[in-house]
Length: 608
Image (cartoon, rainbow, N blue to C red):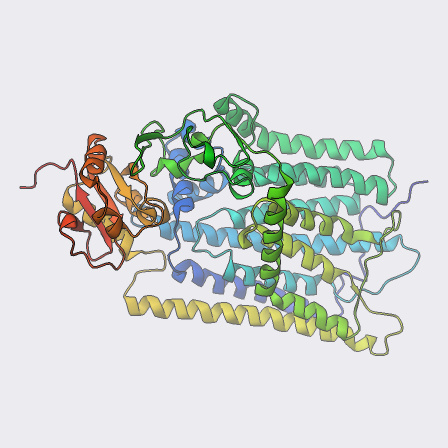
């Protein structure tokens, strides 16, 4: 016998008609204040560009130039570069000002996240109301819809201060927005059984996949959860769940399918992205991450390796590599690492997974300790008398929390198998913690039940205001630091700008190819190459040794430099750090501006 619930629970007296109308009246002002303060990050957040960011900027360039072959990439997906490209056009950016435009793009994504987090909290509350209507026993929940909105935005502000900074040109915030939209659509579908929400879920998941390949697997998990929850918990007939799952799958395929087809055509096999498998090989299987060659069998780890087009190794000692065969990217070695590592197939070995899972478990604890605010508030509310309502029994409609909690745990679990970073798992944390707050109820026997609700709402409002206060303090401090440094904005890097200008002063021109040596100049901070409009096609690999010491003590230094010169590189660039450059072996190196970067002329025309 099918158990039904209202299809459109808009009369949500217990949850959406707030007993504290002042919270609802203040909410638009709070949203406006949140946006205004966060806009300060778009102006003053410090420069934080790394190799990942340059890759996304390069793809954005190829989008604007309609160079489609450079867009299809097994590691970096095109949705975030498309946002960057739109911002580049709207703000009429140049190379000198593009980062300012990208900071503004990140601010727009933050606004999108605000909408997404409100949609998610509203959806959880709506599903809670829908399933509570069909329950035999009425439950008085502690937090209404508006209080949950405040809490969601407060936690989003905190996350944006820590791991989702506007100064990071990375897609994680955009992915979080799309995943929250997808989860909200899923929960509303479960509350209403309307197919349009299943379709919206599929579309949002398709956009999430175009942002990061992680969402491909997660999309199928969402569809399975949709069908399973309706069949097992809501007791819908299985045949009634098929249309919703099919609609979600079709909509997901319409958005994701063309890119999967293009990527599969490029790779010559069915492929939806290789970032997951490569990271598993690197972090779990022990496969060498950078500059793997076919003869380096000791560095294969547990993976099966048959490299299709490895980097060209020009010299073994020191290792010198050429990236000329890939015609895309400022630094091709990191622009599409799936190209150089094509045909690395990781193998599952339990002895590799156990230590990795243990490490990631420690990182989970570290993440929670770095985000104690919500956990402390949850503990305080339970001490004051609130109770978590987590009834676990199929057929009990009150288990509204099951879907968002399960999917949040699955997000965290997928990353825990491979590599856990705070920016990856924030969406999982938000999903889990916000769902737990919605389950809080007021016990019927609680002697102070009438005061627990107002106290809870007041505490949440206080947390929300404190989060904004901390953001304002950080923004003003960033502005003060920029004023002291006489910098035009947080997006501006004097080191990268002066390095590029120094190369131009030596005679390097846009379109030239250059070489690099050392981690910092090659992979860590090579935005200088993009500003100078040059490509790094040759590298002397020096992963650990300080570059001046490495070069001064290299026994075949002249041979290595001649190998690089033969590749046509105009200069060899390195970051010497704070080392004192007094060795005669380094006398031909030129400091680039007043930075720690130096260049050795190789194939430059004679200076007049």
